[in-house]
Image (cartoon, rainbow, N blue to C red; front, side, top):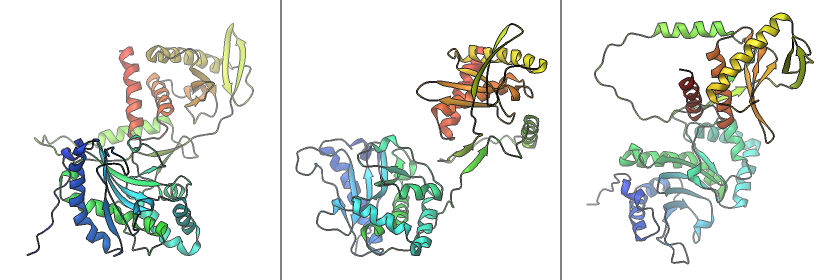
Length: 402
């Protein structure tokens, strides 16, 4: 009777023993067990493919490896010099990916993507990859510094055609529950199948049917700071109020279950282009400094009073956040814009729009705008890290004001 092969997942012990010592044998042995299950499945794509396991020591030295890995390809001997499907276990993550080793292999793949006859297959690859989070790493990079994310098909195409294309990886953090389960084998297999055709095209071997994404094609949400349908502040607040009113009463359940999530909050911001110049003038004995696109040397009475009130509000925000002098500046542009940050080697600051203040004088509204723009300065992508940064600025400001 043939014994049934089993794999119960990765233990924390596997990650803990990714150290440069004899203990590296522990994750290597786990990888060997995984190989025995995966290899027959990968061979169904190409029966010439086989897997190889990392050694305990770096080749030709007495230095222990601190990662364990498994790779699949059709090359022998010295298969490590060629493109490969890979599984790497590090102290903190399990990586599953494809490595396009040689420049000639990368160029071969990228040339394939540009040929009209391959367009349909290429679009299938892009749609498939769009359903999962990836990291794209150039040679000699530190993988742990990269955070995975989903990409649109357009973004994926740009990255696959980039001259630095080398590693593409999905990963699981060491404490991800799926790593402790038998289901991890299926998950790893699915990732390798999604990447197989990139490996095959780079290696000059036949492609296979590209699996469809279970998550669907990722489409980035776009938030416009302006357009012809831009809603005014009152309309936005009314919509928010209606949402609050639509919430249902709590039925007082006694237990809750929150499944693990890897949600991606990624929004593209589209904002007006501005070409601001500084204008200085004196009005009613007050020095006025305003940034505008059109020459401005005088305010009518209403605008002057708004300017004075706006400066008082700005001083309040300055006090709450302890901002450096001159960081917050006043601009006068189209009233659909509220605030914009500027950051380069010479200066940093946030410009607040006097024209918008005319229609909305709420100080929390302006505090939020400042916090949002400062968050952009630190986190250029609208994602969960951005939201947390925004929260931190608001907490700092409101803790001073209360």
